[in-house]
Length: 328
Ligand code: SF4
Ligand code: MG
Image 1 (cartoon, rainbow, N blue to C red):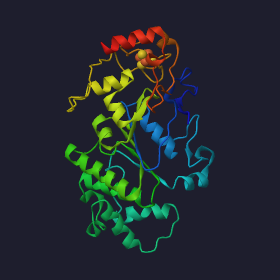
Image 2: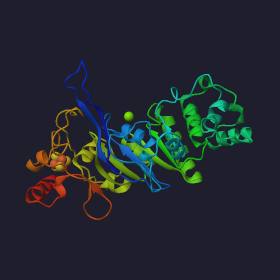
Image 3: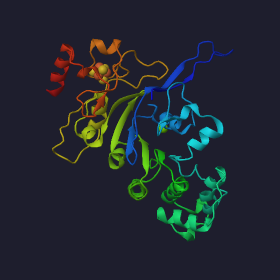
Image 4: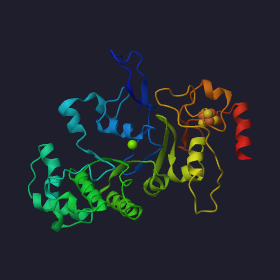
């Protein structure tokens, strides 16, 4: 709810005019039990920072993370850790996220030790975790370097499953893998979700990866959530000009999907000096006078859970005229 993360901004002897980087600037969304919410955007849009705030790996500058009615941002120290025992994060690089000196068995039982849980039948639990991710007991006493990238990401996923998580935040979990391996890992994640009732927040820059796995998708641009809806609506009828531009760069196989080319002007502005009003106005092909002054809020404009933050849909005469232009 209203999550913000601002970096920097502290004056020092060496930097009298430090820039504040608005990595995440007032983002709100919900994740429903059992779903996959995809978050997509270019690097630097704040998607990873958002994931890390949910995991408490970063402290929000403002805003809260509410889980089953409890505000986790108010719980500190041991209480905060215990409340997030049911949250797990998977990172992009399976090479960096596994300690090379630990065997798979040690890696998979480490979560119990960290949380002080005594585990009987450790051996059986390790085998069960390995089988869930398509590996087996023979792999338990090997070291990470003996596995391929895809297998390592399976081990990372197995470790994330050790404590029966309620939420898995997956930050670009397949970006470092070969394309042929990517779909195997995505399908594994889907299978595990069906079998174990998992909930995913899936962060990626690749639109086709997000489409493959998500139920709903949020699009971020420069620290803001600009569009959020179910996957089908987003890919068939993107409303935000930024989403339209992202999608128009991806080839589609379905001829019934209406597609228009939206070409972006200029470069991504710096998050330490974001544009006034709509953060997208410097690059938007439909920018209007109101866009420079007023920041649009994410709204369910038609009452069908298709949220968009854009003045094109506010019903003003200027917007209506622009929309007509957009359709032509
Ligand atoms: Fe473009 Fe204006 Fe919509 Fe921003 S609010 S995306 S500048 S039309
Ligand atoms: Mg990132």
